Length: 106
Image (cartoon, rainbow, N blue to C red; front, side):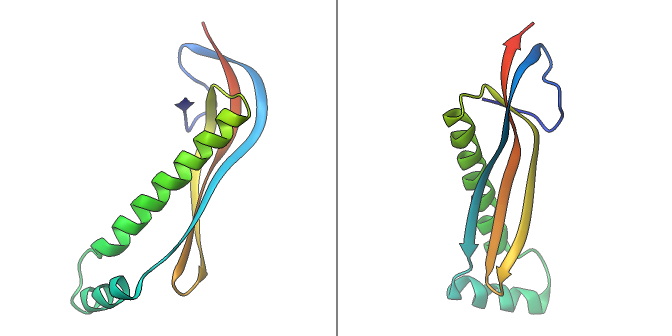
């Protein structure tokens, strides 16, 4: 699966636009990670517990995006983006989205 942030894929032609496609995940911080992050926040520096959580969430959202595009019969995804938001004080939403397309090599 070719995934691009732009609307063109080098060496390929978009032959069909299948439509919007997305992958979504929601992650909650655990109590242990919150306690560790609170102490780290007092002294400054990178909060690795949250970095790991968000990296895992992005990978999961990207995997779901790819699976959804494959179910649509896509060869690629163009205009790929990530978006994120908070649902509550301890939950984060990560959304991967783009346009599923059929591609043909030039």
